[in-house]
Length: 134
Image 1: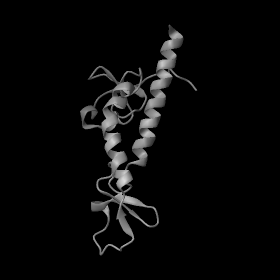
Image 2: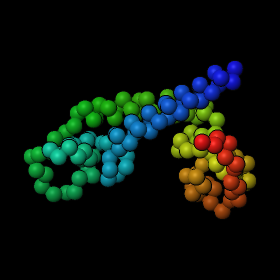
Image 3: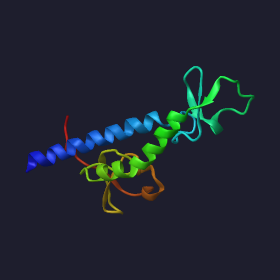
Image 4: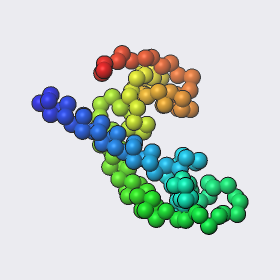
């Protein structure tokens, strides 16, 4: 049974890595969100149309329909991938980071990103032992 549990965890980690890689590819380098009305320059750089500086746009910019379609698919897949990651014990479903801290006030394990949220500001945080040495 433990072997099957391990393979499920490894599969979930692989799902998360794939999700993270896909999200990185579909993220605007300026606003850091999913591309919205993506445009691509002849140089190959892609941005959200609204993120491009407001200047006369050269004719070398065109709508990237493939990117726009991939963003739509990624948005549909994201809830499924987030759910599969949340079953992975020891991982934050919101930030896909290792749960490495314990918040005494909220009596819960949190990740390094959660530690900086307003929800845990001023709370007593304890470093958890590394359960998965590599």
